[in-house]
Amino acid sequence: MNYRKFRKNLKAISPIISVLLMIAIAVVASLVVYAWVMGYIGYQTGKTGDSVVIQSVSWTNDTNGAGSYPKAIYLQNVGSTSVTVVPASCLYINGLQDPTATTSQAGALISGSTLTISPAGLANYAQGSTLTIKVTTVGGTYSQVNEQVP
View (cartoon, rainbow, N blue to C red):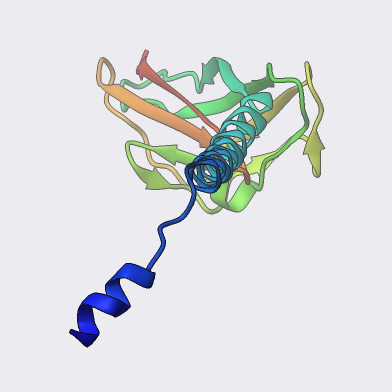
């Protein structure tokens, strides 16, 4: 008996309040999704300003048929922002880093300018073989080319 009396006194939330609660929950959820998507898009588009391209590679002159090695690698900043290239950690040839490489300038490489990278610690490569040359920046942007040894 007591249970029935208690149950009769219970009242549900009014339809107006329940609709307002559902709208509030939907608005909050959409704001959270919007903030997450805008943060992700902002992060991705922020990275598009960095872009570098290896324009060309010059080789040592080989007169005795022992092979040759890259003498200079010309890297151009084609992005809209400056990039930084650290000589000791920027050059990879066939996946091996050349920590003794030098660059023609220190500091940031501004948009539109070209940098010369000179490998130093590399041996001769056989004529006709293909080298994979990769140059990276501090921000992680890179350019990679496959060059045939002349």
